[in-house]
Image 1 (cartoon, rainbow, N blue to C red):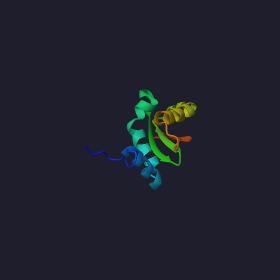
Image 2 (image 1 turned 45 degrees about the vertical axis):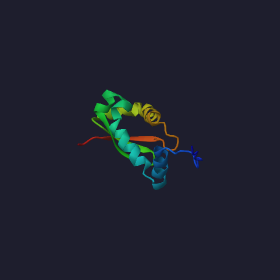
Image 3 (image 1 turned 90 degrees about the vertical axis):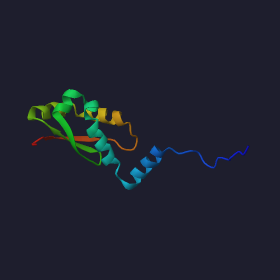
Length: 106
């Protein structure tokens, strides 16, 4: 019976992809797409019906809000939104540090 020597520890493809994504600078784009898909799970059903993420740049998230009343409401919960988003993704290198709210005109 032949025994092969291990030449290296196995590396998970996910780890390689994460490193490559960081190197080419598209981490926030991928995070943003995941955020849009999971928005209801992150902020809850009622908030998700009245808000939607529209931009993410340098840790600043812009959220479209359905009405002036909801803009006022969401501003009170800005820090809660930031915490929920960062906790959902649990990323050490990339964090949302600011949120801007914008009235949704669509």
